[in-house]
Image 1 (tube, rainbow, N blue to C red):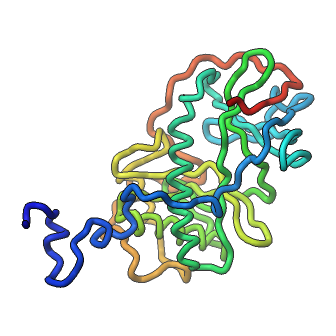
Image 2 (cartoon, rainbow, N blue to C red):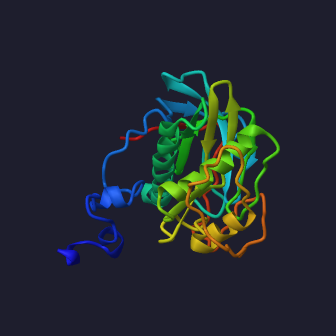
Length: 281
């Protein structure tokens, strides 16, 4: 019956499948997507951050500090790692990172679809952080993930992009593809990470969505408009990919990550030097 289908489904001609998955390819239908190839995990259970690493972070993002340490237990023992925590306050409960982890899961799903299409002959990976707990003092929660070498930023969530070399142009195409494969529901951007011999490793993605589901950096439809207002398809894009017609530039292009609202957090307790971090079960 006609009422059993959406307008888009019913518009398909006779002999064409009207099922949701066929009419809406790329939409999340609830099927499990294997992201194991795209996910770069901690694969470790403990790390240490010695000296002044925590009191004097070596890097920062728009709203997080980043400290550098080494894994001490697990398959990555001896390798460098980082932990990240909010500038605006301490986090003592794991659920404060729910939106961050949901963003990473959606980013991995979109990247997995990109990799499966083999648009380039190297894969894109993304750090998949875990919430770890400092085992001494305040027992503050942090996001823990492997260290990325040769760090650079490829694009932002306001339309800024570095398109000077092939890999940044690939990242622009990935952002465009994410909009296409999600049927215009989301757009993966603010892509940053390191170029390795066999591909790229990303971290701290932004997902912009029609539903504004992914936190303060999710600029929604206005952010998607700003992306396409600045985007010129390159050699890695495909002419059949969906894009916004006559996009409006709502944001000034900025290399930094833009937020439209900032979560309120408690003042961060002082983190003493030389603490280790552990994974809690």
